[in-house]
Image (tube, rainbow, N blue to C red):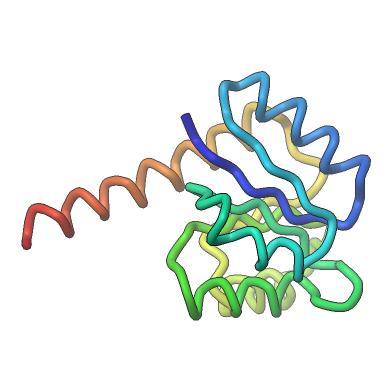
Length: 130
């Protein structure tokens, strides 16, 4: 079971993601601002983070950079921004994948599964070398 932390300031979006991900046997925690998302990292220990970019105070780019400074949890940016330069900036900030809203639930689940599988595979490889 994947543990997903959703960080998005839009309660409608977080409610929708909670329904979609929970119905796909994922454990989900939603928060509605970047700082709360950062504060929940160590307590919740997610397998993956779904992150919006446009949030007040601490935006998604800053949150992404801060997470990657302390942890290598895969980050899937889910944003309405469809600008190549902004997408590149998010990937440069440490995002592992980027999807543009709206996205189908099947595509979202496939991207989540792929990122978690890739990360889990990397951990297995790391553990077998030690």
